[in-house]
Each structure stands twice: as C-alpha cells, then as structure tokens.
Length: 277
Figure 1 (cartoon, rainbow, N blue to C red):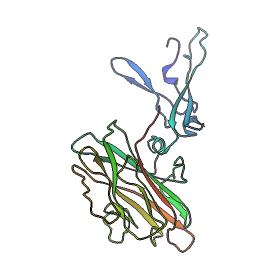
Figure 2 (figure 1 turned 90 degrees about the horizontal axis):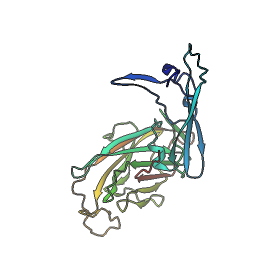
Figure 3 (figure 1 turned 120 degrees about the vertical axis):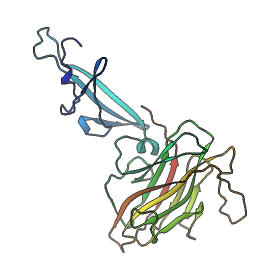
Figure 4 (figure 1 turned 60 degrees about the vertical axis):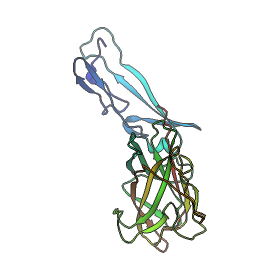
C-alpha cells in the first residue's frame, strides 16, 4: 500500500510483528495462535462458538507527507464449542497425537486430551496435570474427518501405567480385547465400534500416585467388517480386516491428597471434528 511501511505490520501486541517474505513478489505474513491473551487476542464465547479476535495495524512511512493515517483491520476466527473443536485448536499443548490408516487409504490424524468437565470445552494444560483423588477426569480422543462416512472408530484396549512406556509390566487394564477388563459396576462402555464415537465411564484407575493413560484405537470399514464388539459373553464374529492399531499415550497425571490412589470418573470419547474457520 502506497505510503505505508510494510515492516510496521503488527497485531494488538506490537511485539507480534509480520515477517516479510520475498519471492517473485513481496508479501508480509502474520501468524498468531488462537489463545486468549496471546499477542493481544481476545476470546468471545456464545452458545455454539469461540471467536478469537485481534487487530492488524499498519503504520505510515516515517517520511510520508501525504497525511496517511495508521491503517487497522479487525481479524477473527471461530471454532465450534465441542470436544473436536477444542482438541484441534493449534494452541493446545497437553495432548497426544497419532495417525490412523485403514486398508492403505489416507491418513486420519488422531488426538487425545484430558478435560475438566463433561462439557469437553476446557482442557487441562501441561506439562503436568494434578488432580485430587476424588476429581472427575474426562478424556477425549478425536480423529480428524476426511469425509469418509464408511469409517467407524473402535477401541481395542485402554490401560494405565506409572511411566510413559506403554509396555510397562505394572499396568492397570480398563478395556481389554474391546471389552471391560474388570468386573466393576462403575465401568460402563456406552459406545465402541457402532459409530464414529467411543465413550466409556470408569471410577478406578488403580493404586497409582501418578499415571499415564494409553489407549489402542483403530478404524473399521463398516462396509467390509462387523465393527461392533459383543461383550455379552455370546459367540459372535468380530472382524477388523485392514485395521492398523495406534497406541496413544497421554500423561503424566498426578494425584494429590487422599490415600494416593486415583479414584475418579473417566469418560473417553472418539469423535470426528467439525471445526469452523
């Protein structure tokens, strides 16, 4: 823009400045993270979306004599308020990531995070999470949608260990071979393999003062497989041809107070994201 100094381009926080890139033509790039307070970003919330807003400023050249005033333009981006929208925000740090494939098809990125309540809108932030022994912890796992409606999500195993090593011998199984691993009335599997969501509820992780959560998940093509596990004790064919299992690990989670054991409700969800930008 004539009369303006491109090197002055900045956000509301003037320390967040643009980067000039020169190829066949010059342009300035401004990058920021959607997080309240970052680079002067504000977050507004309604019933359905978070909206992050900022202002881009461009100052006139110092030697300009044309009476050019500082140029300002409002910028914003919106995200759906749900588990998917939260997990796929670029600002999230305390999450686990992996990739799923099925039958040689495209890659489906997957993420897991710990949430503070059943609304799945407020993630715990790292690098560590501390909870009291009676705190309810909610865990969410989201697979990024690539538009394939034939793909369902299945959890094969979910367990805890005291270290980040998934092969640790002292583990506590929650789900094993697609079904509850313990005879506990507090453990309830609501969905597994019947949709693009997986949910289960648990009240005991075992006698750990700290823990890592490991969940083995995979995709299932409903047109060529029977994807719904049968945990009622009756014989039933369960096929997972072409499935590639991914182990996702998140932690550490520390327990404070009480007897030192972790005793809380856990809800786990695997859902495809729907992010609005």
